[in-house]
Length: 131
Ligand code: HEC
Image (tube, rainbow, N blue to C red; front, side, top):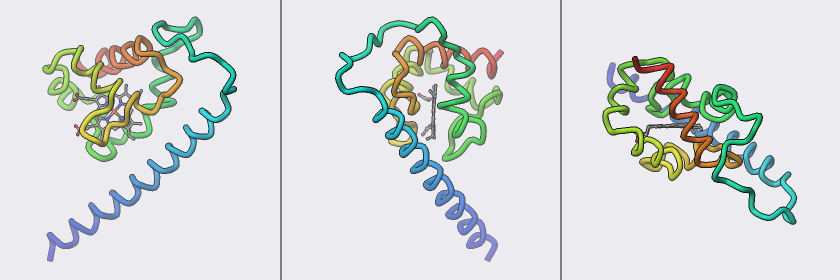
């Protein structure tokens, strides 16, 4: 009986994550839609002047990584992140840029972030979580 209840709770959490996810996807579609189509593709290989890794983390990654939604490694949790860090930063950068395991979304949903900015956010997470 206990197991069934556990499964129910897990299912409920999954549904909640799904709802949160669709909200996030919607929000990003709306904000991407706001960018004028005439603009040539943005220069993506740099860190823009007013970039803040912390702010970007809060805006794009915190929704999942603060709560550990869907098994996301939790911000500030050394156990979660040291296991990831063992793979090497380059691997983590790649997982962030391309997405990972069909659940970590490509670019962590920060579609306006350049690769270098995403790397800076990964560095920020690791600095605040491991060590
Ligand atoms: C929609 C939820 C969600 C968002 C938003 C999100 N992540 Fe994740 N992330 C996950 C989940 C879930 C995992 C764990 C996937 C697994 O191990 O199966 C993960 C894993 C990771 C990993 C580890 C990858 C690896 O190779 O082990 C890194 C690094 C990461 N996320 C960085 C980020 C960054 C940086 C952002 C914001 C720019 C971000 N994530 C936004 C859900 C999310």
